[in-house]
Length: 295
Image (cartoon, rainbow, N blue to C red; front, side, top):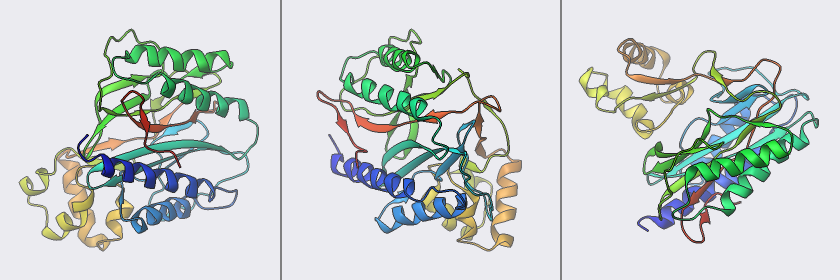
């Protein structure tokens, strides 16, 4: 497989960053401090974040990353989904886990960990994605919970985090089969009551629809240089704010937003009083398959 070593490096850094971040999540600690510490860890390892570190609490499944000057802190009742992505020479690693600060949802957390392990065990070329989803669904429901049906795993290619084959968290009747050499993320989510999530809240993660729009709309060279490392992947405005003063990046962001040049990633939420958990690994489809994001 071309660039296999780079895929392994990206996965290894993501795995180490995830475990490093897990140790930082404690009551009273700022979400912003944890996110920026994990992102700094990734940079220090010689890679870049593939997306802003996600720290999604309680009924939020994904897509919450601390904003600029975010003052929110973890509390002892929080159930935290930590999702970390790494890009190294275009190759990606995507991995996630759940930290239950409340200590009240051990079985729920175990349900997605067991579903992830069961799904990985059956991955090889020729396996239908609906059968992977069925395994995830049966594992979670046997433990008394529900899989989130409108979230799932995904294929990855160089500098492309979500593309091609979708890996459902239930039997969606799809007949798509995995192919040798594909890079996929398996990503079960579960909750006690909810089977679906919805978008709610302001997006703190955005992505350019196409890098060429920077030139088409005559955006300043300074802004183009600041956004260069992130132009193919999701990003946070706090990253840009570290590279340019407000008066130089805000007008460019506003113009691009007005022209609908960004994809926005709003937080993905379940019912207010429900709790969502998550687990994720990145895998190369083979026989046997290779888990890239093992610590």
